[in-house]
Length: 144
Image (cartoon, rainbow, N blue to C red; front, side):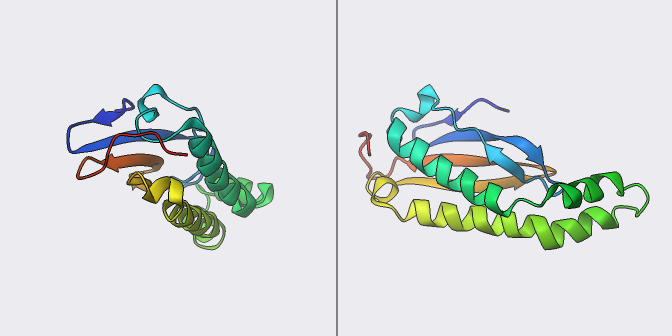
């Protein structure tokens, strides 16, 4: 379901993956569009700054074109081992960089002050970023 999830305890906005797709589900970039559902979570400037840092971290660690092509094109001939090899060596660097950028973003005053967190979520062969704000004790004020 691509629609943002909203309930009284927790507000969650899902940012879909864009750009190139890795066999493990990671995307080279994530949606940087400031959605209306984000208005009560985080300011547009703060959101753009954070999502840009996350996307930049992934892009700088994204595998080169030959690795990407090898991984996809050789998959049938290697019975999937080519995707596993490139995933373990190349895509894992990009995933680690994304998780580190998210950890750093969550530690900023912009996020901590309002109880907003970013997280990278994987499911099957897909991934997305969730922007969440818990309703417990946090005021619904703009940040950034």
